[in-house]
Every structure is written in structure tokens, then in C-alpha cells.
Length: 111
Image 1 (spheres, rainbow, N blue to C red):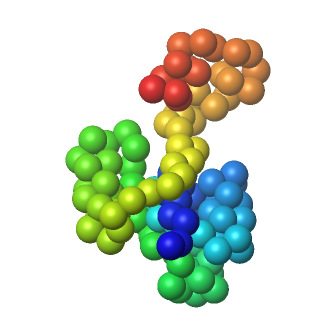
Image 2: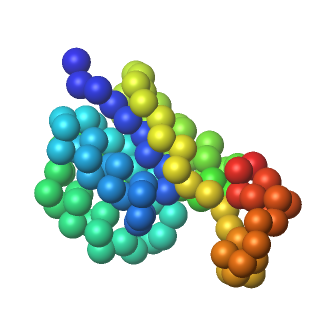
Image 3: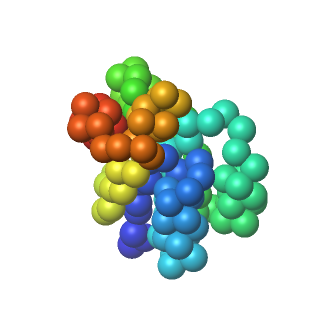
């Protein structure tokens, strides 16, 4: 039985590299994709066409989350590992977080 993972925020950065590592270690990965176009994810899909499923996902949108869950449930009976890497941060929040810790911004990010 294959080990199945779901990684949110897989478009870039840590989420992308976690997805890549899982694929290299024989996981099947459902990669939550926020950006419509991601050259990195497209290349990864080309490299692992049978193991990687790209899932449109905006964690800030309840309908998007429900659609993603239905898509995954329609393709597998179980998920062994969930890596909730995605976060919501606005451009103004980013500048604030880099200068000083703003706990309200951090709280929104985790929610």
C-alpha cells in the first residue's frame, strides 16, 4: 500500500521542497496549489506523473478547501500524512513581521 500525503502551500518554498522530498521517497502526494501557474510544480509533475496530484487550493476560502477535500477523497480512501504548510499573509503584514513581531498578524497567519 502506498503512503499518501497532502501538502498545503506546495507552490514554492518549504511546501515545495517537502513535496519533492516525499515524492523522492515514494509517497503519493496531493500538492495544494494556490498559484494558477507554478513552473516548479509543473516540472515536478512531469518528473513524478503517477505520484503527484496538483490540487487547486486557497486555504483562505472555505469553498476552495471543500473542493480540494472532495477531489482528494475522490482519488484515495485515506491520507497518511498532512503537512499544513500554507499560511495567509498580506504584503503589508510581511513588512511588519520582518521589522517586529506583531502577534495580531501572526495570529491571522495561523488561523
